[in-house]
Length: 109
Image 1: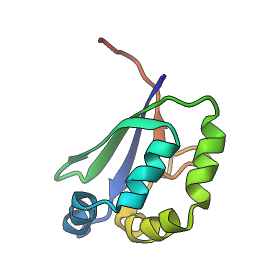
Image 2 (image 1 turned 90 degrees about the vertical axis):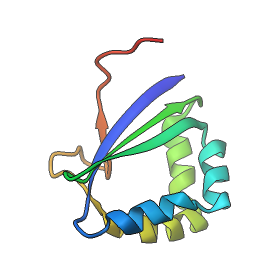
Image 3 (image 1 turned 180 degrees about the vertical axis):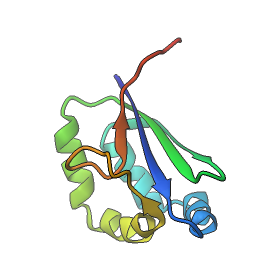
Image 4 (image 1 turned 60 degrees about the horizontal axis):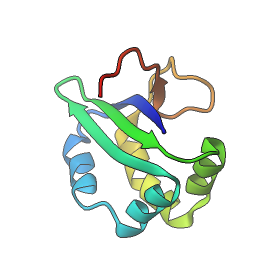
């Protein structure tokens, strides 16, 4: 299992919309996330800075393949068409990232 953290900004004026989207995530999206070996997925919001922090645990053997499966899913592409306009990615993110991945520096079970 691999713990993963990521961060992104939220566009001004999109906080309410983003919260509403995530109060009722489509069942197909929840099933897809699980089928891509992601567990314990949480998104936190820090206002008024409008920073989103995402955390999940990856339980698969091929992260790139699972992420490609997720990205190729038509229903997920539709979901992203609502979510992505709300988000404001960091200019300092690595090439190919939307959410900027974070380095773990401490963990305690």
